[in-house]
Image (tube, rainbow, N blue to C red; front, side, top):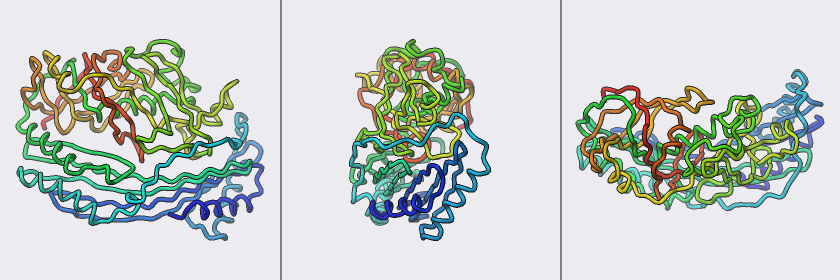
Length: 448
């Protein structure tokens, strides 16, 4: 951690050396530590400290970007020259308006000193609690326990100055037997809020329960999806079509459907970068304050998120504070998604199911048709048959090919708690409840 004052000095040095019409500086730091284990043994303990400086230079409507991790004065000056040189060789972007001007930012406390200072011994103790349970049941545990402290400072030549510091902690494990496997994970700002013993217990229980699985024919089944699987679908919705650029390029499922029902009325999805339950970030990578955005409300398509560029392409629109670091081809996307919970427990969902499949999580999911929100993947680490309201036998994993909106149209019940799940890339946490969904389409089987 370099601290706000040091990062501000870096930003001011870059802006002081700039000669472009407009300049933006994005500085990030990361202190990350990772304890990785496999076959019931810790085999890697690493720590990394890094700083990255990204300069965006604007010459008229030509834009250049340069990045580096050398923060000496000479290197920063060279970085500015590189960004300005890159801008000079670019074609003009006639739709570019301006970098954003400053607006008040509501700070949020997301930094926990005990997480930043977490020792290898503490992480090893957590791993040990998982491994002991696996060994006691003749199983092998693999996974990772990581902690990190991160800083972000954004400044530009129009007066934007924004600083944020946060911490993250995550523990996950896959526990393997000869014929079954189980999964468990938790994520939090405060490492003390993690319970590796419980994570291990869940994974071991699933591994024991999923031993000697049987095949089932592909087809459409009622499914009980745990929170991890539902969060995966919510993340994909955000990635595929809840950003303004995807709408403007006519490749979003929201196109021509604003104000219409696109899912069942049980589904409400919002994005809130100030939500203290996850990994909050009060501003985006342009230094614009994040707004809470209601994306889907009781099944109705309401809105998408904007950055300054996409907002400038539409009359009457303003950035919602969802810019990613420039340059990127994705445009703005929501990275603090939350689906509102319902009132059922998983046990109640299972008890109400005559015949169905209980899915712990999805693996290797990929989009197939963004506009139709069709994606594909496989079940993993605990898939079970439900008959007459009871879990009767473990199943070999299945491949699915399913429309996400179609699945959310067929929701029969939602869990009473939305849990944080690290879904997608980086330190992105999506809140999602478990769900009972009818007519989920499985298209193939596996041998394991």
